[in-house]
Image (cartoon, rainbow, N blue to C red; front, side, top):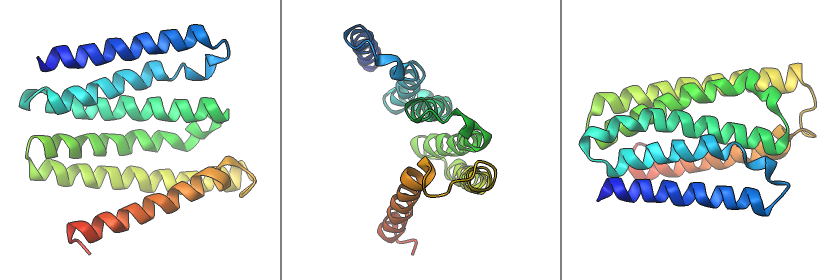
Length: 169
C-alpha cells in the first residue's frame, strides 16, 4: 500500500504541474519542478518505503537540492551562482546520509552525514562570499544581500533553537 501511495502522490503532482503549465503561459519559471518533484518523491519513498528504502534518502536529498537551486536560480535569473552553489550538492549528500542514518538507526552514518553537510555548507559560505562579494560585486543591492543574508540569519536562529532543544548547548 505504501508504494501505491507514493506513486499516486507523484502522479498527482505531475498532473498538477502539467495543468499549471497549460493554464499559465508564463509558467516557464516552473521547469525546475521537473527536477524537484522526483527528488521529493525519492525522499518520500525513503520515509515510507521501509528499512530497505532508507538509502533513497541520499539521492533524494541530492536531486531535491539541485531542483531547489535551479528553481531559485531560474526565478532570480542568477545562474552564475553555480560558481559556488555546487557546494550545496555536497551538503545535500551529508543531509541525505544523515537522514539515511537516522531512518536506519545507524549512529556512525548520522555523524558522517553531519560532517559532510557541515563541510558543504562551509564551502558554500566561503565560495559564496568570495564570488558574490569580490568577483560579482554589489553586496547589499544583489539578491545575496536581499535574500541570502536574511535566510542565513533564519538558519542560524533555527540551529541555535535546535541545539537548545536537543540539549547539545
